Each structure stands twice: as structure tokens, then as C-alpha cells.
Length: 125
Ligand code: SF4
Ligand code: SF4
Image 1 (cartoon, rainbow, N blue to C red):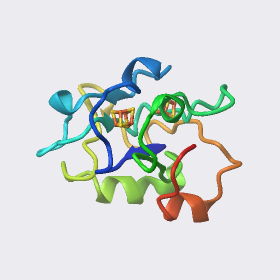
Image 2: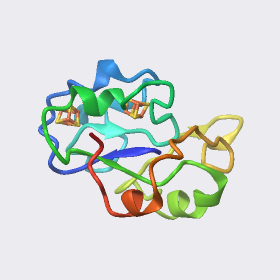
Image 3: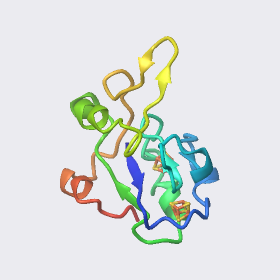
Image 4: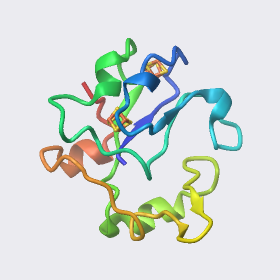
């Protein structure tokens, strides 16, 4: 990631069309086993690094619905793969490349967002 959507989400789906990476899907399309909320695909999120603020958070009316997650980089491969259980994440399995884990497909991230914010589920604002 990335950013992650929490259970504070009201499923308004206002964030979906704003995402420049097509990383967000509605609850009805969530790849999670019991996906109740709009979901961010960590293997696609680029943290809107080219924008002043993340577009999803800019569109979101619900404080705390979108929080920072760990960088989607090789260093955090185990973090994501160990949570790739259909409950927290469902990372896409590419037919030829295999699992698009951070090791296989690292994504850009905002270096200005510290690990304390990422580990602490700090809202993206
Ligand atoms: S931070 Fe940007 S790229 Fe990531 S889900 Fe939000 S809008 Fe999409
Ligand atoms: S804009 Fe916010 S509240 Fe609406 S679906 Fe997206 S994360 Fe949920």
C-alpha cells in the first residue's frame, strides 16, 4: 500500500472514481472473503505520489475511513504476504507472474509519511 479502508467506511464509494490507479473497488466487488467495505488493492495503490494529497482521502466524507498502511516495497513483503489471507488482503495472483506481492511488484510510496503513522493507523487527510 498503501492506504487501507477501515470499518468506519460508510460504503458511499465516492473514492472509487477518484483513484488514478484504479486501486479501489466497492464492497460488492471486494476480493476479501467477507468484504463488507470498499477495498483498496494494495498491489495497485501508488499513494497518489504525484498529487498534493491522496485523491481517495480528499473525496472521503468519513474521518478515519482511510488510514496509512506500510509501504508496498520488498522490505514489507512478509508484512503483506502474511496477511494475504482473504481477511485483511487478497493480493492478485497474476497468471504468469504469480502473486503480485511487494517483492514481485513494488509500488511507489510517500517517504514523507513516517512508519509511526503507518503502524498507528493514522487517518489519511
Ligand atoms: S492513495 Fe491514491 S492510488 Fe492509493 S487508493 Fe487512494 S486514490 Fe488510489
Ligand atoms: S469515500 Fe470514504 S466512506 Fe466513502 S467508500 Fe471511500 S473510504 Fe468509504
